[in-house]
Length: 425
Image 1 (cartoon, one colour):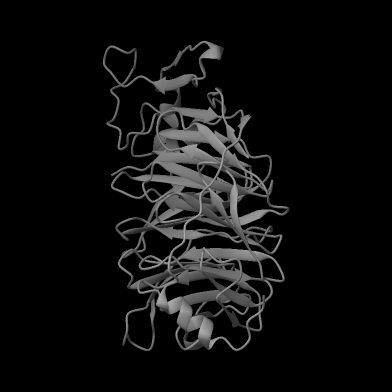
Image 2 (cartoon, helix red, strand yellow):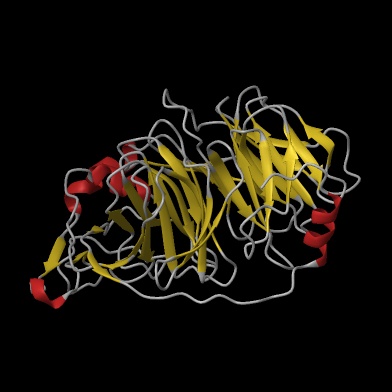
């Protein structure tokens, strides 16, 4: 069922200090808006017949066991009372959100000169409200125009990035919490990983399920898709297996077996190597053609919660319950010690959620959620903490950079909300 959304927005007045710290490089003219509300509709989906890629056929034939920022904010506290905010009223029946904005022109009533914006977002910070449970996963689509969020409430909500950030759709159908999700490369589908042991494929336009991918016997914690060639899905489960899926087939092409629950997965640039992490603390490097582990990346001292390959395909980013984020050299023939950098400042909380980290589009920054309710952004080379962004009221479980050139990030939290905001240059 696809659900379209009506109007609704509110100004968050009670946390001006948090708003300013979100854009502490832009100490004047801050504003924030919120979207919510829903309505029903329905539609249909389409299926296509496409030849199965050779790599997947090879894997199927080989299978022998195939189952069916800076912390000192004192300089910005004094600016909270210098801002002038105006509300532009819109009739309730127009279907548009109420626009909330700080003045940015010399004739708009601002007491101080506005600092230039760094994005085309309607406001420097937007709060996206609509989930009724913890939000575990969030992703921009490949165009950056849309956002999908997955929650404990068993739904995926679809949002526009720009304008009023309309919640234009909702996907329902799982019987368990949605722990991870990915957009297809053409932005037409969303793949979900859930506590009901399923990987599912959903049509974004209609909200209908295209296919249930069955075979895992326990919670599916993580999901990833290949970057090049035919689209391949990799999933990691508490049953100790890594599923290899063709999106057009219900059953897995193959499984890779381990002795421990899998909590994080990633696919290399070429699609022939995959990276997995779990409760044994090590990162395993697999050759998908040989179906075997070819290397270990050791250094974390607790459960691996996320893995991500850099945009240039040469580095791997990992997050762990040991409260460190690390980068690794995954180039062929690299030195035996593949550890590159260790980043501190994003502690895990008592919840022990699978908190994720991500790369910026250029690979020059990395970001991670944390148990202290903040988003941490570092320089990937110098390890300098560039931002420690407040605003959430619960653990920040996921944070993603928008594809493209605008410095925009979105974060998902146990407080049931998303925060979409711009960074300084």
